[in-house]
Image 1 (cartoon, rainbow, N blue to C red):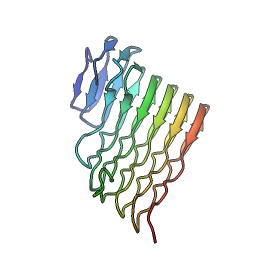
Image 2: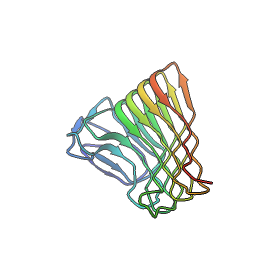
Image 3: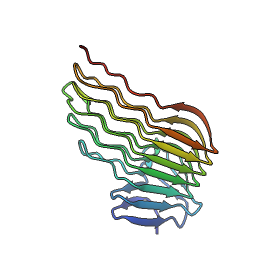
Image 4: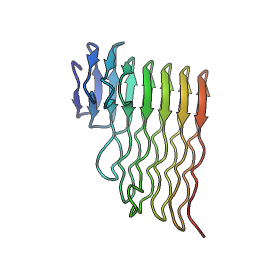
Length: 212
């Protein structure tokens, strides 16, 4: 049972027993295969941090994956649900897979990490996670491939399946490559809509900036 903000370190289902107000990041996910059952409650932030953060800070590390959020309202965070791969001067990490049920979440992000974090970056961009959304309201859903470094490729965007939901912006584009010679842009992720309303979709492939 979740009474307050904190770290979740083991797989399993965790259930809110009340609404929570957070200063900065509220729930830090440190394991795969975690379900947050909101029970109809709300987590409200102070305009900073993450509501639920399954991203990683380690260079090139994959985000925690198979994260489910259901029956929850989130508001007042920089990013409300995040599962972004770690960036690196080498190969970047993949974004985590997310499932959202019956929730209101302004911003959801599961993009791949960047392989071009400085001018010496020589890594491939990370692949974005896959997203499944059911009966939810979201303002911005981002599953973007991570940009690739010198002579490397951009990451692919993540596939999104959206059912009985309303979303203003969906972005699953592949990332650009900064490769001088051999880099290629990532593929855009497929977006499947079932009885849903989406205002804007960007699912294009990334450009390759390499020369001959």
